[in-house]
Image 1 (cartoon, rainbow, N blue to C red):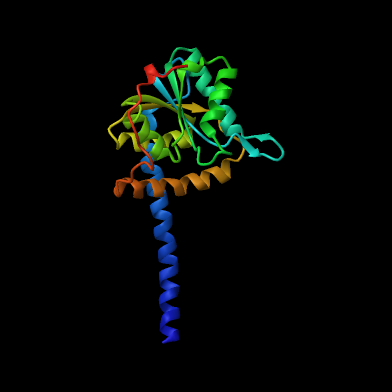
Image 2 (cartoon, helix red, strand yellow; image 1 turned 180 degrees about the vertical axis):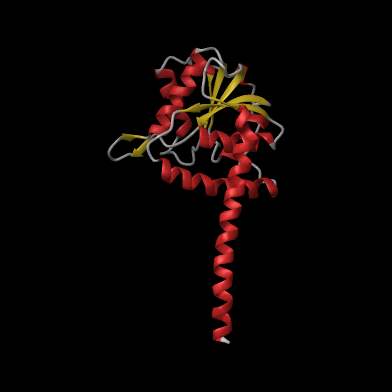
Length: 219
């Protein structure tokens, strides 16, 4: 019996590995190929939308050393560039505000204001816990069915794929990359498989709430 089991394992393990790699490859190619035409890196070329959706990430790599996360910094740069060029009228900052000690949207808002974006043009989405949540809440809470996503290219591709399957017409603007490309690339490949599962099972945002008119929010 043990011998038969070992023989089966020698077959099943490599087959399983091949299947996993194939699924990851397929998910990645599908996301890249179906969103390429919606992604921009040139401020002058990207079309205008009323709202830009700035996707959150941690501001610091290591808070104890106060080391800034380059992915965060570059996203702020990209959002400022779009606003100053008149390519978006409002910026929805969407991120994790899971505890009183961690508030991505507030940090993004403060940094955008410091760079010259008026406070009244910045809307905080404190329940953007995942990319899926940010896209769905931008549509359902803030009433935006057409908007510009702002993040790094690898993140924009996944966000656009979600938008394309959620009745949203979106384009994306690429922020510059950071300096941990290999680690981020591996994590992103796995995130795309998880995203496919979420779409198949119609995963919803963690929180919704009352609809908000972004033009009526006081500064």
